[in-house]
Image (tube, rainbow, N blue to C red):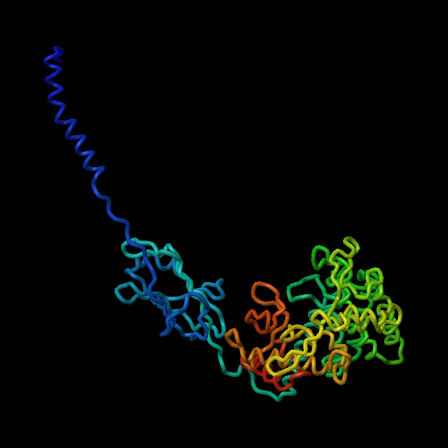
Length: 496
């Protein structure tokens, strides 16, 4: 080794070019331009068959043998397609499909492995994991919704109108008969409600029993036996509050199932629907024998036990809908018209034990004809005497009039045959006019009322039109619109 200063300077001189060479190389690396990122993949055209698809709304009337084409600004990396692109029925069930390519791999063709179902909604989706051959990712998800066309062929052999009515009425009756709760005999709230039975709906089901006997769907002995179960449960097991029943009960124990946070007691309107059914059964089972006499006596105990006048809440001139043993009058909802509650006031006025005076009807239910009770407006050339513009949901003309015959019924405010018939004709005419351009609405497919719809429950009406037809609306309107209702029934049954 060299230790003198001259030698050290010599080595430093030898190292200097190497140092600068290394430094220059690092500097060159920092300043070298980076490769640009791959450009994003974007969709250009989406086609359902030969039609350009809309991405902002549902594409209706699509053929069941449709091929779907997604075109992009670059060729696709085929390896990313299977995991990024899907076809689903109702957005849930994946539909097997084949993939092919056109336009130098920039167009993906999706072909379902089998023909799609008629009148069914599908979703085509491509996610951002889809890449171009240059590895550019799809800029944003693509979603296309479409609904396939109706199959216009008849699904069943054509039968006479009377035979069709009998068939549909018998099948409807089976909901109340076959699907009744096995302990109480009461009607379940829905097809998935388990122990939950409904008081008002049970009144509707009770009214169907005399019809079923008369139409020979069941025997009188079978109907009587079921009524004995129902009435025994209501009399001896079900919870009651001042004689009134809750909206929902447990079909085994009779305990209240709360309808909402404060609604865990009496529901006077639902009680009135139950009572009109019980009174109908009382009048039908009129034989002079021990079994039917006992049934009538037990129904009278229930009927006489409802304290209609107590629901005036401290003697006011109006009836109140709810009362709770835990929350009192917290809901504080007066029953005022026009709506589905006419029968509540009629039954309260008719009670042999707890009746209300006429002032409660006039001041409470009708508001003396003010505050929207009287309408007298004309819609689609039909005058609606009472209630909201365009009539409201059709159950306004169904529920009370199971027990009240509107024919020839008039008072200071309305002819009730005109009210119910014109209400229905306005609803029908609105669906035919279809001002919101809902797919499928027509003179054959009509009727807006309360029902379960996608994503929940709604009281559909011309002023709350969510694009969903409830078949019960047209079919329950047979007494008012027999021709239009029969046309709807044939369409629902044969075509849908």
